[in-house]
Amino acid sequence: MHDLTRCVQHPEVSQEGFRSLAVPTYRASTITYEDGESFAARSQRGFDGYTYGLHGTPTTRTLEAQLTALHNGVRTVLVPSGQMAVTLVFLTFLMPGDRVLVPDSAYGPVRGVCRDFLAPRGIDYTIYDPLIGAGIADLIDERTKLVWVESPGSGTMEVQDIPAIVQAAKAKGVLVGCDNTWCTPLLFKPLDHGCDFAAEALTKYVGGHSDLLLGSITVKDIDLRQRMKEVLRSLGIGVSPDEVALALRGIETMGVRLAHVGRVSEAFARRLQDHPLVDRVLHPCLPSCPGHAFWVRDIKGSGGVFSIVLKPGAEIGLNPALTAMKVFAIGASWGGTRSLIAPMSVKGDRTVNPWTHEGTVLRISVGLEQEDDLWADLEALLAALAQSGARAAA
Ligand SMILES: *Cc1c(COP(=O)(O)O)cnc(C)c1O
Image (cartoon, rainbow, N blue to C red; front, side, top):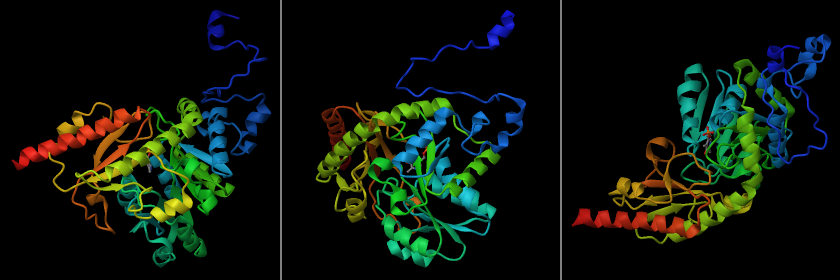
């Protein structure tokens, strides 16, 4: 054999005795077949078989199986982002003429895809009050094929009565999908509560280090999984095993990370309530949070993300005060090791329940820094705001 051939053929080495705890990263576009017959019959390998790298490798199957087990599901489908997890469900199960119901508190780009992509293609959407509960029945007409829920809501944290919504939807034969990103399967398992889809941005707590983008949809009905895989196959969408390998590493520490940030976020939420510049704190653990009773009933604990609404006028000097923060970074996305803070615009995003709070909304994602350092940084922010307010008034 010549050198040029040797260069492209890796020698086989023994794997005997090699038992690592890490999941190997299997990269592939091509999958090779042992003989011509198996190549000819490759389409009969089914959706769990290996035929082409785009459709799955042992690395991606491992994460799928792990998420499936955590959600008490039957199969999981991986997609390149959390947004794609939502839109894949929409694209697969909605046809022109159909309607989807979306809560007013949904992750912003979900409203965007309804307005800018689905509606022009004849798929209708209705935004509903996240606290509607069993009243969702009144919005379900014969065109409605899917009810979307997200609890707690993005930024504003309303907790939904998912069992009541599921019951009303099931009574009319309508599918229910849940964006479970804040909870993760550790705090809430949508499929156990009757939802058909548990969608998550793995980008957040599963990844856990602000360095990957991935989404997942777990189902308990294999047919739903087949239909989503067919759409991915048609569109040519798959995930990188390298991203998945990072997620497989991240998920190992998700439990301790989430327990920590949940505890700290609750402690900060309670303390911030009493601050003179804070109008209200939006955190499901507080009795003042809309839907708090459903959080107590259905959700096992807290994630690390919550929001505060500043008193009207308290935002004077906000940008320099944010810039001066020493521990919090300014940025969107969340669920990593670094704590983040960012102003959010809520008002323009609300169509059913007008957002009446005048003050600026700040979203906070607690990371893994020392708790006192974080608290000092938040206190410094509020002190700086108090100072610029006093200066403006003088
Ligand atoms: C971040 C997020 C998404 C989108 O995830 P990406 O991976 O950034 O696309 C979807 N839903 C919720 C609730 C999120 O917080």
